[in-house]
Length: 452
Image (cartoon, rainbow, N blue to C red; front, side, top):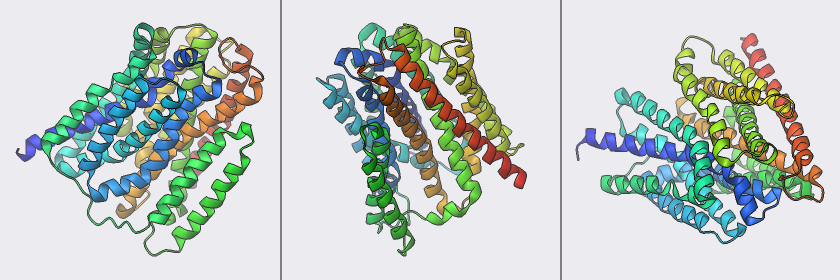
C-alpha cells in the first residue's frame, strides 16, 4: 500500500474515531429518563450512569495517552475498539444497573485511549502540507457526531427503546478496527521516557477519589475529598522532586496558561450542565418524549457547526481572549434564560440552545489556540492533555454538583419524575453557581487582556 493511500485510510480512521467520541459522550443523556423508568433508578443512579463514564475517561486519559504513544498506538487502539464493542453490547443487554455501571466504566477506559490517540496517529502519519486539511475534515466529522447524538438517540429510544442506542456505534467501531487491521501499521512517539510510574498512579487515584467525593458529598463523603487532596499534595511534592517527572508542573507558573485552562473548565461545565438540565426539564416537567427532546436539543450543535467554521480564522485577526470573552457572554445569557425556564416561553429556551451553540462554537478553537501557544514545543503534548482534562473535569464536576444539590432537596422522593419543585430548585441553584463561575472566568480573561 503506497503512502498516499495509507494517509487517506488514516484520515478516515481519525474521522470515525472523532465522530464516535462526540456521539458516545452525548447519546445517553436523552435516554436517561427512559432508562430510569425501565430500571427503576433513583436520581443518584440516573446521574451516575454518566458520571462513571466521565470520571473513568478523564482520570485515565493523560497517563494512558503516554503509555500508548510509547508502546504502540495502533496496537492499543485495536484493543480499545474491541473493549468498546464488548462494553456497548454489555450495556445493550444489561440485566440491571450494576451491569450498566460496569459497562460504562469499560467505555470510559476505551474512550480515554481513543481520545489520547486519534489526533496523534493523524499527525504522525500525514505530511505537514496535508495535515491541516485532514484535521479540518476530522473536525467536521466530530461536529456531525455532536449534531446527530441527541436527535438520533431520541428517535431510537422512542421507537426501539434505550438499549438500542448502545448498538448504534458498534458498526462504526468494527469498520475502524478492520481498517486498522488492513493497514497493519504501528505509530510511536519517539523519545518518550516512562519512568514516573508512581506519579501516574498518584494522579489517577487523586482524580478518581476527588471526582467521586464531589459526586457523593451529600452522603457525608467529605473524608474521600480530604484523602484525595492529601494524595494530590503527595503527587505535587513527588513530581517536583524527581529528575524526570511525567507531569511538568512548571507550565502552571504561566498565568495565561492557567486562565485559559480555567476558562475551558468553566465553559464546558456551564454548557454541559445547561443541556443536561434542559433535557430533564423538557421530559420530566413539560412531558416531551425523547424524540422531540432530541430534535429540540439539535439546535445547539447545529449552531456550533455554523459558528466554529469561522471562529478559528477570526482568531488569526482578533485576540483569542476577546473571542473567548464574547463566547462566555453568550453562554452566560443561555444559562440565565434557563434559570428562568419555568416562567419564560418555550421559544426562549430554543433561543437559549442556539446561544449556547454560538458560544461553544466561538470558544473552542480560539481558546485551544490561546492555551497551546503559551507552552514550548516539548510541553505541547502535556499541555494538550491537560486542556482536554480541564474540559472533561468541568463536565464531571458540574454533573456531580447537580447530583449533590438534588440530594439535599429531594427528600423522600427518589426520582425527578413528577417532582417538579424537587427538580427546579436544585436546577436553579446549580445554574446560579454556573453563572458565578462564568462571570469569574470572564473577569479573568478581560483583566488578563487589559494587563497586556
